[in-house]
Image (tube, rainbow, N blue to C red; front, top):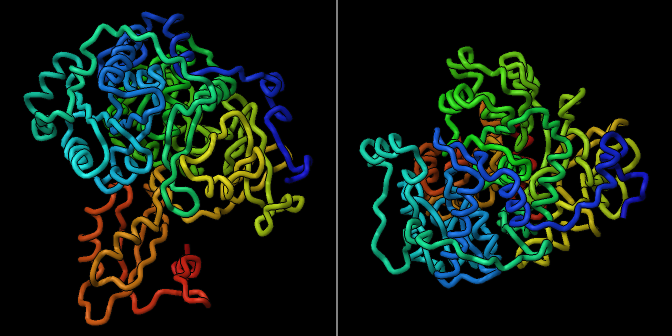
Length: 555
């Protein structure tokens, strides 16, 4: 355990009252119910122009809770959400938790193999999706080939304004998949066909509310068990650093809600404040600029690639940004040029922060008010303690003034990994959680990430694990050895690049291998090249050497 002089916390630099704040036990349904009580008629969601009030979505969540119970789901059962940003997500998320069930978030970018693996690992019994061709066929394949018992399918058109819903049905039929008649498949409209008379199962603050998958340091997917207290505490921590100087708190919801960044900084944070989410089903720069023009949001969380795409769009100079006070950047390092260009173009502050799946969202942030420090991830948020461990010997603190492995403790730290006590033993150091990132802390408590121990690749804020891509490459009969590394990319931050050697007699080029590989992995995992080499670097004991390959490639 590091000594006390290696521990830094938010109270030393700001929010002294927040450090002493007792994060009283609170469940997610309690947080939701309090905002419904205080803001019943206020809009919670604006979905392409159609508004859903707090009371309307609360009633729908109660119907979801009752409907899931009628389908035989019990408290503690895992309910999967395989959804884009649609109103169904909000009702399903809070409805499942009201019923005492555990939500499992799945990326809409997953292939059937990835989705199926995590369904099996989590023991998900029921999956909720919509009738989009990008989602429903994948969900049906998993229903057929895994232990998944039930599938609930909604219609994207159900959430749209009437005119847009009609247009969707008439002109976007290629994007809609037919819902099969199957006893294991329930339509969303049937799930909520009840009076919402559900007393609730009163989950406890220490109960697991959300399983959020992360690849961790080894690349093997692990489910972070986030409790009700973890989620509500992180929402409160975010609120403490958010100035909240406007009467109507309206936030752009362009980040995908299945991601922990959006779950914390868009959904739970806004519900806690009684604010409004301007929800877009997916990020498109043109659509986002139109939504900003139409709705006049106050804030917008995003990843650096989103801000870059918005800056590159021809409508950027025609958009009214006067309502936008601040934007949050996370998920990947923020380039100074992007920050400067964004602030000059919009007049809003772009604030960089840092978080992990295991932190329920946020660990540190640059100040919303006052000067931050470019190139840093800011200071620990209220209630959070951080310390640096020696990179070579994590049993002791990093030498004074030297970089070390970043660890942190606070009420947002996960309960542990789902059914992985072996992984817990590696990541926990008492109450502190090891991040695998190497950092420095300056005299003002600002943290800068200078290196990372993990091999993961950050593609526009999404974590890509090279071992997964390598495993797919190894299924090709021509591939002998495979290594995947991240290479710099101006737009995405990083992109995966694959290097392979071939079996004797194999005759295939890199372009052919890339065309074979990319359809078999998630969209965010697609490589920008496959390079065929005679040899790949190896360690003295014969292991493929990723570090040496990076050095050869200059990354």
